[in-house]
Length: 115
Image (cartoon, rainbow, N blue to C red; front, side, top):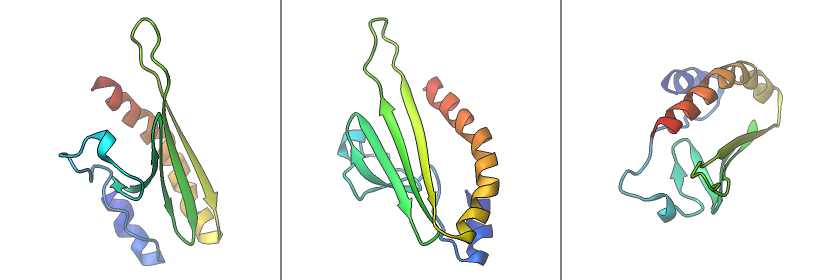
């Protein structure tokens, strides 16, 4: 994220901060719509957490859905991202981001699975 933030400021995109910019003293249930959660803003927080970011180039919504727990105690979580590209700069930005997300997203989910 630091590399991304350093590069994109030259083309007019905003610094999103860091993925790990979380308030460690806050429980997941204490987050309210409008609160920052890492690089996103919380839209809603229930069995599905919706996080997002919106600027003149892109609108991004991230869904983290907690499926009902099955009888053997296994907990499944689905993560989905929807991006609405608003202009040419957004399209150009999304080219490398799409490729990197295919590498980064599985790695992040694997780390979460180890917790």
